[in-house]
Each structure stands twice: as structure tokens, then as C-alpha cells.
Length: 366
Image (cartoon, rainbow, N blue to C red):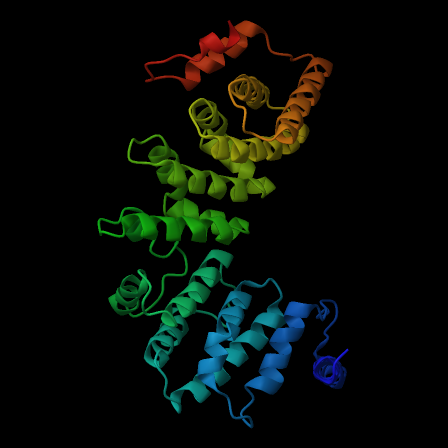
């Protein structure tokens, strides 16, 4: 081990010891019955507020932004821990004070965003939806890249109104239905935000208000939707299917299983792999459901998926085995509950899923 490596290791250890000492000095922040467990993210936020941007320190705001520290703080506003959010709001207030007295290339944009955020918060220590927190953190990243294709779009967004709408998905309609030359890039950007931003039932409520899922399900079958966009849409639904309560709302309120039955017939190999993961999530959730209609629709979906696998050679065999095992377990459960579907019932469900279609899926069972 060289001398330089020893020095780096020693500095890291000293910094770790310093953080631990500061946490022990502020033990009074641990409030029962909701203790502040000092995990790594909370430790970083606390050290940032108490050391890095304290009023006594000289802060290089440009480095604070470029190293994604500001984006990290904005994302932490969606934390469920009220004490952590209070620390983050304090960090942002201190950072704004340091920012006013400095000068660098994206200072005005960041000041505008922080001002709009303050004007949008109606009550103290407000918890933001994770998708809104991710949107704000992505804005900060775009401020540092003025050559980005999204730079002019977000600049117009900040100047459009004197606040940020925290109860809707920001810029969804503008970007998804964009008519600019860069419409594919803008549509992919907002779909990527949805894919990584839907983490809670609050996000689902925001998406419902903006008609996100209805728009995605309708556009998926449109001739203007290419394979890459279809893959992004399925990734959004896969992220949504990980949330149990949200998944049940999709099944009962949006006819999600019937939509999957139509989608599974004509899709690429990559889309088929994402569909298999969605089917597995649905199967795990339907174990505790005794709704006969949903069980019949899911059984039909599994059969259609296996039928589709016969013509696919590039999909991983492990995924096919998992889906087939899901079908076997599901059918065993149906037999044990004495509601195992007959072939006529399955054909009826297939007919219902192909209304207004020229082709029929009944040949899958012939």
C-alpha cells in the first residue's frame, strides 16, 4: 500500500469519526416514540446541515450544486420522517442565504426554483410526493447542463407561473404530447421520470389526477407509438405494479388485465420480458384475492402469454419457467377453491378483451 493510499484511508476514517462524534453530541434530536435512526442518507443530510452549509462556513455553492448535494436535499423532501424533512428545509434555507452572495452560471435559475418552491408550500414541514421531489432534483441537474435539449423547456416552465403545482405531475401533458422537433426526447424524459418517481400511493393519486395511466394505455396501442416508447410505458407499469394497493386499483378501476391480454399478443422480445415481470407481480398479489372475475382474467392472461412464448426464441428461459410455474400454482389454487374456469368462460373473457378489434385471440385455444 502506497503512502497516498494510506492518506486517503486515514482521511476517510477521520471524517467518519467526526460525523459519529457530531451525532453523539446531538443526541437530543432523537425523539421518542419516533427515533431518528442514523442510516447513511440521514447521516449525510444531517452532516450537510450542521457542518457543510452552516452560517459560519464559507460554502462554494457551485460545487454544492455540481456534486448533486442540492438535488439530494430536494429529493429528501419526500421522506416520511418529519424530523429529517425539517433538517432538509433548514439546509435549503441556509443554502439560499449563501447563494445570494455568490455568482456562478446557474445561480438565477436555482434562486428562481427555490423561490417558487417556497411560494408553493402551504404548511410547515410539508411532505412532497416522491415524483415531485425527483422532478425538482432533475431540474437542478438540467441547470448545470445548458446544452441539454430540455433546458429551454424547463426555463419556460419556471417563468410560466409564480408557483410549482405540487398536486399534479409536472409537465406531463406538455412533454408527452409535445409537438417540437425533440418530441421523442421529451416524451422519453417524462416517461423516465414516471418510471423512477412512482414510489408511493401519493404518486398514484397525482398520476390519476393527470390521467397518466389512461393516456399511457391508450397511446400504447396507437400507431405513433414505437417499440422504445412501448418499452418505457411498460416499465412505468412495472414500477407501479410493485405497489400492492396501487396495483389493485389498476386491476379494478382501469381493466389492467384486459389491457395486458391485448398487449401480450403483438410485442417485442424486450417488452415481453417486462410483461413477464408484471405478470409475476400480479400473481403474487392475487393470491389473497377471492374475486372470481379477476382470477379468470389472470388465468386467461397466463395462457395467452405462454402461447406467445412458443413463437419467441430470444427470451430468457428462466423467465418463461417462472411464468409457467405461476400458472401451475394459480390453477392449483383455482381447483382447490372450486372455481376453476371452463374453456367457455375463458373464451368469453378473450372475446371481451378483443372488442373493436379485427382479429380474435380465440385461435390461441384451438
